[in-house]
Image (tube, rainbow, N blue to C red; front, side, top):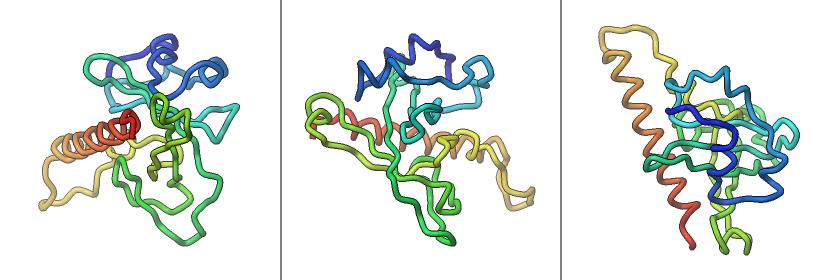
Length: 164
């Protein structure tokens, strides 16, 4: 992923504007290892129910505002992230809704996805299984996972941008 500035991030959002973006908090952009990410995802430190995903699409950054559902999965239940397809304990996967872009979102239409609660899918796909003669090359595993994650993120974005 190419690096982004705060102003590029603020200007990238397809499904929100104004007040939501004025009060957005940012992660430490100077600490991010950009080349190890398919997208930048984070939770807002001042509005914890709010999350953000920003990534490069067709040569420009696209941002999506997410809102976390209020309920949590019962203890002992496992869940899978819809983006990175990592199985996790239920408390580490959250149902996020994203308002659709344009008038549909203003009218209340949303898209829901179960996503890693901390939005760190790019880190999880880089965790490798234990070495084995049966496993493919680690670089191939990561490339395959990254490709799948990117494809599912594109599909999610298409749903958010679609005017129902």
